[in-house]
Image (cartoon, rainbow, N blue to C red; front, side):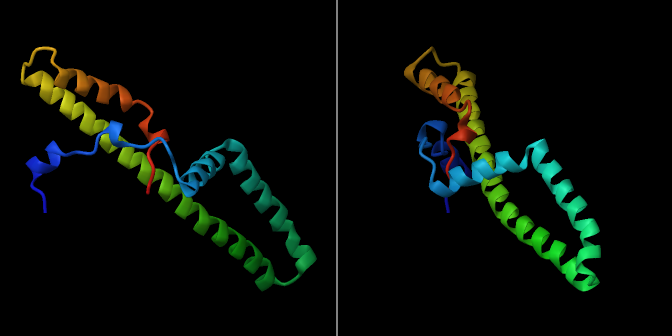
Length: 138
């Protein structure tokens, strides 16, 4: 296992991140955007409003409850998996940004002249902007 010093020296940086996302990562991002909209919530409320009076058509309490329980369980199960993917990628991107900030601050604190190391650290900082849109879980 690497020590903390070795880990800091070899930290994953924004420039190490490929801008190419896998199909699943792109799909999870779109699903996250879809589920975070107000109209998605409105559709969920509409589903409940349509389901509630359906008891009078179905006339079986067990079947009526089973319909909403099954539908909501399936949607919840799938959304949790997709949203967890997006959240994990966002967390990884945030860590990479912090790595870039820490590296740049370390360079500044060492009081070096504007060297290539400092320019490299500044470049890493610039690359970290919007990194969560490029971070892949692969």
